[in-house]
Length: 336
Image (cartoon, helix red, strand yellow):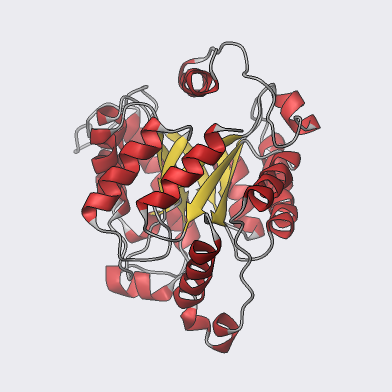
């Protein structure tokens, strides 16, 4: 079975319970012990251009089509309010309309900025429209300006976040939120709602992911990929520990993001945009050293580093809004 078809099959397995034979070994690593234990090599997804806010609508749609036609497992987008990005759920809905295969995943949706019932309805709608391809990445958020703009309380957002998850799961199960309120549709594609991945880096957030989520998603950073992978490995182990402590069967799905580019110009522009994104940190942002894998060698090394720590899916996060970037990355990943 071709790798692309197998990836689609195994995504259906996550939602319905069965899968076929794994594809050939991952060419970047010869398959690690983690991969052998899972019976599959690490999947590679891609995000919309990450931190340059000048993504035009036509680029977004074309990018989604190319992601679906390429070798990628998922299409992702970050969520910010006080920034120039498209609204993540609207972007995912647009992508659902022009794709057939690729998973759709916010990385991550900042839940405390939103009303839980409206969010549950929007998520179920995208999941239904996409035929069950929606993966809900959720987080509590960390930027005060987003909370000010949304007129939302940043304090105690973790507690509210857990309450939101419980409410959304009741809605997706067809249960009313309270006695005098009827059920909120539509029905999610697979009944219980989409797969839920929870992000974050604090001990509380990591353990929450293990307790309440179906898996975990780690955001990318600007350090060398090998250093990032070692840091993320620590997060993975905390999530796995919390998962086991509450007696959940199986194992969590472990996902990570990787800021990357294709070619030296795109790498330099991506590094500049990351420094700009973190400009609120002042001098620390202006002087930060940003490592962006941008060659076949450095990308393979990054893939290997993440697969070795047990990453199930690595989301490539290009920083340059240029269609040539997804074309070149698609060609590279498809040739592995």
